[in-house]
Image (cartoon, rainbow, N blue to C red; front, side):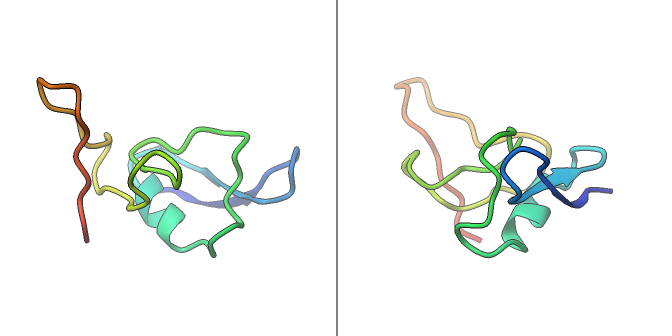
Length: 73
C-alpha cells in the first residue's frame, strides 16, 4: 500500500510504499503541495496536457499517432 511522506529535499509531499497506489495518494494531496523531486508513476501531472491521475500501475498510453489519452474520473 502507498502512503504520503514528506520529501527531505523540498519539504512537499511525495509517496512511499509499493508503487501500485500512487494515483490515489496524489489525489489526496492539495494542489501545489506535490513534490516534484520524485516521479509519480501512473499520474499525469499539470503541464503535460492532462492533470488527472489514472488508476492502475501504469499511465495511459499514447496511440499509434503519438497522441496521449486522458482519463476523466
